[in-house]
Length: 300
Image 1 (tube, rainbow, N blue to C red):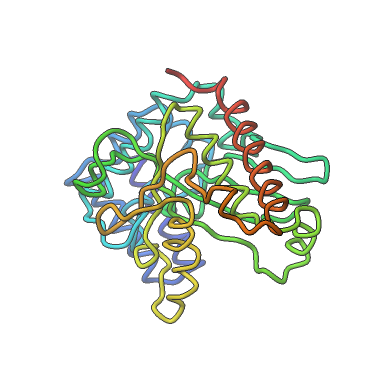
Image 2: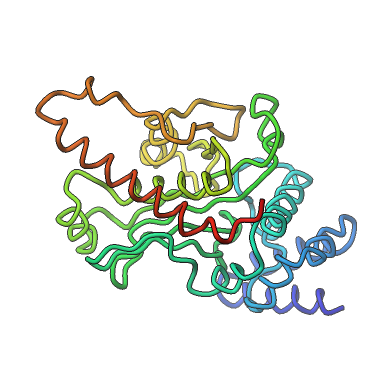
């Protein structure tokens, strides 16, 4: 009854903020998870999930069912349930309990810079259907870039994806390019971009878990995809992943190696090599810092 009350409360809140149709979807989706699937009971039986819901009482516990999409467009309900269970079972098995309070609050700091920049790993709340965890690049009071992800069983992405846990990056979004905070970043880090910094930190995060690959959602499968903005989505997803060695694995994702595959420095035009080396040095330092910061919280 407590879970049903929580679902009803969130449905009312969603109705008030987003409209009746969204509120009904939350109520129906959440009730379905309580009934025929029993997914919420299985999720709450995972301590990592139960602690998250206790820390964020106003959030939607049935996020994987109450939104139109979860992680990637077109996933069957059974796969959505399985992916949610995959993620929180991974958190429970591989993250030390002392990491969770930080994740559910301000986040774990994986990298910082004297100019006022930080990259933090933290749990999502209102956007959890885009991935339960996010890496965020902060500059003063601004979020310059956010990359959300979930740990899923690779086989759920198709037979080409293999087996075992695989990090699936689901949201890759920057502040608008003309924002003053972005101009400051470009002045502090010439010839670089917030998205590169966050991806480098993600590589370090994955290496802390001893893994050698990640996956990124395909552009047309991203849950906010709109055909009218197809080129923008292609730049932020498929083209971005391909630039770091990405290759398609099934309909939903592209697989990338960790560390990233980049063009050999000898193939970069001579006049650009100094800048390329500087960029790559930043990425190396970021990945190493993220790996070192997270490693004490990883259980093997």
